[in-house]
Amino acid sequence: MDRASPDPAAIGIRPLLPSDSLEELTDLLHRAYAELGAMGFNYTAVDQDAAATARRIEGNHCLVAVEGGRLVGTVTLSPRWPKPLPPWREGLRTAFLNQLAVDPGRRGIGLGARLMEAAEGRARELGFPSVSLDTAEGAVHLVRLYEGRGYRAVGFHSWPGKTYRSVVLEKRF
Image 1 (spheres, rainbow, N blue to C red):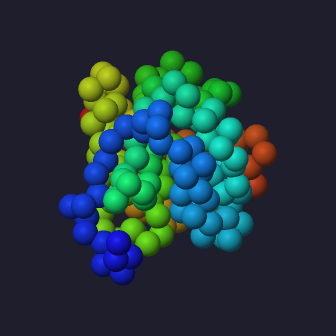
Image 2 (cartoon, helix red, strand yellow):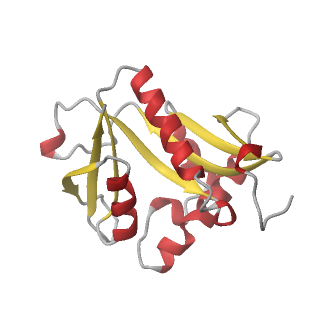
């Protein structure tokens, strides 16, 4: 596989299969989030173990991008908001995108956008009127990226154990 010039058409997106390796998925998350970790953001994906990966995808819709049998991207769609719910969030009906990750060697070819489109499409199929996500308030490049995809900031939340405040963004369909 030529890592210098990836062919986006050679990368398929599908649901995570029971035969897929959670260790490989966890390693992908570590690679993808390493830069954010180096910026001081202690996202869960920076150093979670495979057991945490399993807990985060359990009961959710985990999609993976696969190239030549290797996992090169992922996103998880949760039909329920993680607990604890922020007070302003009670009663809203939205799906939640989390742990969006693209292998650093596969960035810049639209793979993240394809993963988000697939997850957003699944949310629409499930009847959700919107999809939400959060990211570190200081990760301005990510906030701008999501805003460019039609997301708008709807609030802030401080997750237990995180060293940053999250901006919560929502996209209505």
